Amino acid sequence: MEILLAVVILVCLAIALLYIGQQFKLPSIVSFLLIGILVGPFGLALITDQASIETIGQIGIILLLFTIGLEFSFEKLLRSWRIVIIGGLVQVCTTIVAITLITSYFELPFNEALVFGFIVSLSSTAIVMKILQERGEVDTLQGRTLLGILIFQDLAIIPMILVTPLLVGSSGPDLQNLPFQIGKVAGLLLVIIIMAKWIIPTFLFRVVRLRDRELFFITIAGICVLIAWLTSEAGLSVTLGAFLAGLIIGESDYNIDALSHIIPFRDVFAAIFFLSIGMLLNLQMVLSNLYWVVFIVLVIICFKILTGAFAAAVLGMPA
Image 1: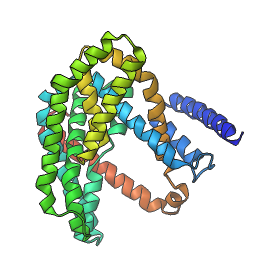
Image 2: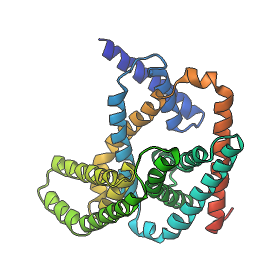
Image 3: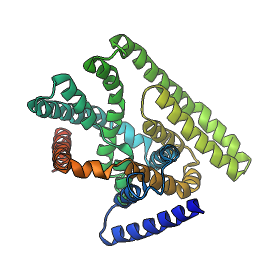
Image 4: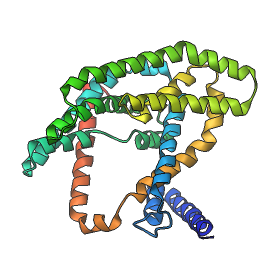
């Protein structure tokens, strides 16, 4: 009975906050984050099993990026190589340098300042792409530019992970692992290319011939999770793998059928993901350190805007 009551309260809060958010033209992400704060362990404590929620939320990320990949053109992505390499490199490097210099000014040791720069240089692919999707801007110039930079950030995680243990002085992986890590990524890309070119289209053709909707749904979901798992094992993000899986199926003859099967579930799981983020926020800790929280958030936002604008200017985009 308590579980049922918690669900009723959660649904009522969701309806109320989503309605209010729509009145003020707020993104649904904001409403879901607020709901997560309210029902989480630091709020009304209606939901305390965060492990289960985070697991479902992870599935939500995978489905969200998978559907975005389905709607995106692989040909357009290949034409965006300049954005991925130049734009991503400029944005990440300028952010790291700027944040490292600022935090060093506040007497933070250089190695710790550099790690903080690594963290700030990265962005949430799920949140950015969700906002672009709600605004209908995924397949626009700014949408493709943001996606290219996000892909570079996902790839930049590997050297950051390898260097960070050396900076903090732990007995983590050393530079000898770098060739092995690069080999893993190259091997992963080779496997994905082979799957995309020969294995997946042939397998989907055989599945579609059986005219079984349940089998088709399970097949595309399985392909999505498989490629997400492969990228995770190679040290890359699951979101990148899910996006690549969407691109692969999106280039096949079955992309519309795949979208029709996935979309009804995507928004539910994506909502749970953003709820789980809200549940992690300790509002009491934020309020007790409100000055520093506001200051740090404003600094990060300003520098992300400046470095993003600088990267766009380097790419020759209009102001």
